[in-house]
Amino acid sequence: MKPPNVIRFLSYNIYTGGISNHQDRFGQIVDVIRSADADVVGICECTDFDKNGRFDSIQRELGMEGVMNRAPSGHHVAILSRRELGSLRPSAGSLTMYHGYASLSFALGWGARVSIAMAHMHPFSSLLRRSEMQILLARARREEQAIVMGDMNSVAPGDDLVAAGATHDYVSTRLRDELGRIDISVIGTAISHGFIDLGASERLPTYPTLLEDKAARYGGRLRLDYILATSAVADRCVQFGVIDDTHAQNASDHLPIFADFSVDG
Image 1 (cartoon, rainbow, N blue to C red):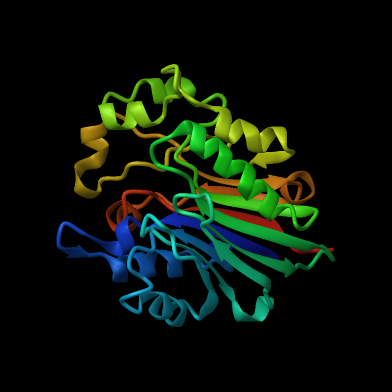
Image 2: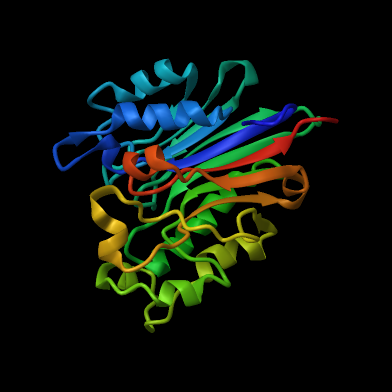
């Protein structure tokens, strides 16, 4: 249950637009997001949302509005917010990024304007992910206070030993750099630019879930999804969590993550 006097941000990879193996999971995904009672929702892998009307549908279902990019990969990125928040400067793009980003700014309760950028990093190249992170941080830093969130397809400093235990070649290979080392530089880049990893204390896994038996097939679970915030915003974080229940385990191959920030002055 969401505490009073907070604003909740949620980040969620919904896996190929909610359709896979001839199964339509869109209704389940909407239910998971709605149950989270978030105020700002970042979504990646909005596959075909530009063609099948589902971007309009999810805004209507959640009572939110937002912006979505058109990614070269076809896996679009969107960010939505409750209308009463009065979002500013909506922006989305994919230039030099595989999946791209979507962002909004808000004037929040503590008297500051905060920029929020949602992204989905390159699935295969650590080098390109690092470049994309630098682009994302620059986008987010249009305001002094900022949040960056999404599926970073990367592990953080301190998570590399867990990642090294992944037995499936696909997972293990894409997490390694050009020298075969587990790559922690993408999240490390954000940290070195003053962003704080809000999930670092518990390091709860977000991928894969029980859907399509991925957890069993991939030989372990990893933390690939992050909410990162500049220090002034991170100081207001009162709760960080991973939504890990039966519904979330079967709605997507990623679990949604959330962070609550106090809006008291």
